Length: 94
Image (tube, rainbow, N blue to C red; front, side, top):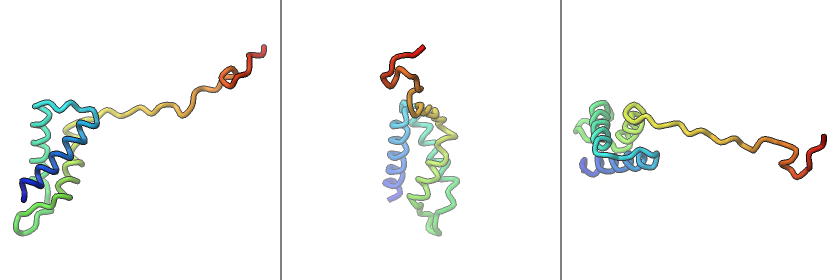
């Protein structure tokens, strides 16, 4: 069951990165695998049997993503074009 959990977490993180514009090269895939390995080591949510909780692993993985893959911030467009008299159909006076 653990292999399916790890595969789902990897797939969700991979898809998030790809949709965020990160080109998923071999090196980036290896970095993602290292990130998940680090998340497993840091995850203190394992029960007495050593089983892992998928939701906690996914949250930990997503929390670590910015440290491993710095994503560019999107610049928001201006909410409207600058107001000029000619922009609303009036001719220039003066």
